[in-house]
Length: 242
Image (tube, rainbow, N blue to C red; front, side, top):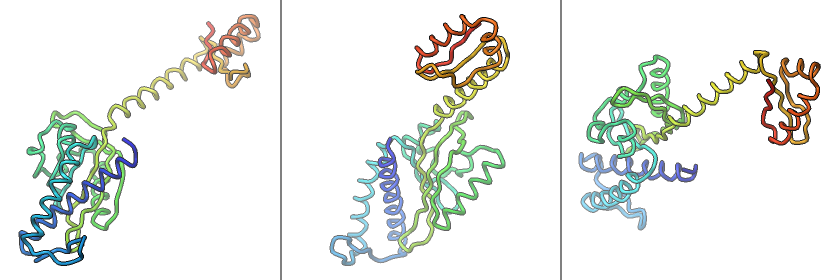
């Protein structure tokens, strides 16, 4: 998903959350009418409710088909909405997640809890945030999610909760960890002195070499020359001699 797609999904999800907050305010009698954006005239409550319900249905259909997980929490930190994608990511049904304290979905690590409280406080102050967060699935396994959080405002402009877009980063994190481990193993191998390793560019210019290679260079120039040609043909891939 591109950055533009992510921003579009977040905008649609935020509109859905705002529509739901406005409907709640209308039904509870907090407001009597809303302004028709097309004509800039007040709509009676019944017409406003119907218009907002139609808007909500339209946004919801789009939100349910996005590749991102989407959820909202209220001012008490309880889940008020999740799309099917977010529920599937964590192994729940949407019905199971609604009403849950969002803290149940977070790692127990003190630093993670502190970071969450800081993000929520920022949301209350109108700040958006983006962070990689360790989430806990229903079966107890971990999921790394890139969480983009945006505050939700009610019709009166007051803080009504937080909207979160979640992109599953678990596979990417595993790949990054595997790469780090591979590089660490290669580093130990290069330092072991057992195998000669040299890196060159396509012109055959040496970029790096370990001590074992330098010893081989002094003791067996012909072997090193063949390895240099192999390294050059491999377009900067490490050549191994042993």
